[in-house]
Length: 252
Image (tube, rainbow, N blue to C red; front, side, top):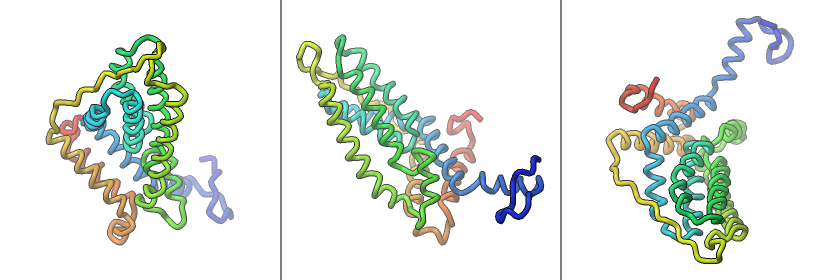
């Protein structure tokens, strides 16, 4: 309407019809489709409670030693941030750690240590997979030569692993969470493993998510067939929304 959009060579101003087509061609790209697919997977994992069940099951294996419990929460927060965003993941982890915090003695240094560890680990998780943060997808799109998911993981996962260990050691040295303010050894209340079993819906969501992520990892070998990762992102959208919102449990 304001005629501020110019042609590619800058020789003329585009009319409203031409400008609209140009703007929407830029707004909707394979990268945007990949982002939508990532959001769909994250929502499916959250709505079906798969994230909570798996995280609780892993944390139940951490035992009662403060240092190991801290590392377990950090690893879980980092891994969850790879798939359900680095905003939702620490929120979920904090919900699970609250019962532990309620049993700690007054002035315990474990509480600020584990909360800070969860937050920092979630930030590390934000770089670990292409769909964990929107800027990762933008970087992936701009790379020349292009990089597939396996290439991303080959670089990001070792860096993330080393970062988690270094942050964990720094937190242990800074807070000494294994001791109370009286200098006594601190014992953490263990987390009970979930008793509920996977339902048919949860198995279905898990299968679709694993299939989609697997295809993303090997997209370069399937490029002749699918063309781009954005096409693969249609799979979870069709699988979850196309099967009916009431079956998945989403309000549309």
